[in-house]
Amino acid sequence: MGRSRTNSGLAEDLLIELDRDSGVSLHRQIEASIRAGIRSGRLRAGASLPPTRTLAAGLGVSRGVVVEAYQQLTAEGYLASRSGGYTQVAASIPPTTTAAGGPGSAASMTRPDRRGTGSSVAASAGLSAGLSAGLSAGPGVGPGDGLSAGPRAGSSVGSSVVRGTHPSAGSSAVRGTDPSAGLSAVRGTGFDGGPGPKFRVDFGYGRTDVSQFPRAAWLRSVRTVLTTTPNDRFAYLDGRGVPELHEALCDYLDRVRGTASHPDNVVICNGYGQGISLLIQVLVGRGARRIALEDPSSNDDARVLAGAAGLDVVGIPVGPDGVQVDALHRAEADAVVLTPSHQWPTGGVLSAAARAEVIRWAERRGALVIEDDYDAEYRYDRSPVGAMQGLAPDHVVYCGTASKTLAPGLRLGWLVVPAHLVADVVEAKVLADRGSPVIDQLTFADFLARGEFDRHLRRMRPVYRRRRDALLNALRTHLPELEPAGIAAGQHVVAWLPPDLDEAMVVTAAARHGLGINGVGPYRITGTGPGGLIFGYAILSESAIAEGVALLATAIREVRGP
Image (cartoon, one colour):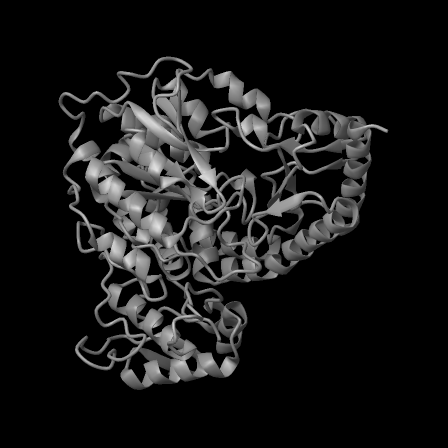
């Protein structure tokens, strides 16, 4: 099945991070970012770039700034204009000796190669100086050490942990978590799709508007697959999935999320739930004893699975800017699961310096960072934030899914795995189900290659943004004392309660008034922290959102009493 190279396959998204305080002109920063992406292989020969108007709108700059950057890169031989007025990466790129010098240049910035085999780690253009400086400091542990080499001899990890105790300040440990505990907590207004209470308005989180699923475009891809796919693709394949999807995902993820992926390192799975299950199996098989999770974090996947597998679960506190890395150093964990681009549920973004420190921690311990990039495509008031995997592909597993962008019923997920772990993850996948459905994989590959996924995201961003704005306006009107957080991206907002309001009482009172909403408390590992409410808005109309906030205001007045 050939990849589309027509105008219909135009890219509509491209990861470029701009620093407006750097003193470097914006067009120079755009040039440097694209140039670095081409040199590193993140943007491959023949890849289509977004139209200048589309990229300018996404970056919040004038179209002329993007046009100037494209023209300069075309003059240097990095880009080529094609008939129809669109721009592609040139078939061959110029030598890397000149042209890139001067302010904003990426001449000295290197990235890992697409296979991730221990090449140097450095910042991509646009990342802060703190990140690039942090990555170059301190000794590292090579990819052949730590978890890649099996259990560490004489390791004391987990030996001092007692059930329910706190081994160090700022972290907590849970051993042998009851698998049913997390699942029961999400029934009703959360992710779970099973039967639960019916509410007049339900702010349940973790749901995407499946009524907007692009049926016509998906059907076109299904027809293409059924009429053009060779017969051998329908036979048993290896557990990694079909090559067409590996290629399409690498093109997309490298361009939009800034990963350093290689098709050989991609494993297709049945959503994030199966993906994290496979990774936990591999960790246990390699001798891991303790896994660190953000606190608060989801209680229906990694926490449940890790506890059932016998791993110690350590909670690492989350602040406004994501996980507190100093607590991670004290946790003595073999792996950490992070949502660095939009922490769930608080919405914090892990800073560049903190990302560098997490990677240093992983290198020193020979530990694994599991990056859950669950909703990074939906951003409204901020520049894109690149994936951590692109900075350290030997130490970071990138986890993605179509559940929030297309529909959870597709059960499509993907892992970009360090090369030394691929065989183990594939073995676990084969034992689990012998591989994910081929037709769905091939359909998604065609959908990606044609640019339909980009178009769908571009269409949905303003839809979700209007709903987000309706929520924020309603909170300002009816409940100005609540503090919204994590509003710049995603499909939910957390609002912190004032100290005089008890979270559980507010949730209970809201249910009496026909409003479904979750508190933050059930997702804490330590059980301590400020009260907050999670507003999932993705499937609600703007009028339903306003009605729901009004119901919540009534419930809060009831809690406060006369």
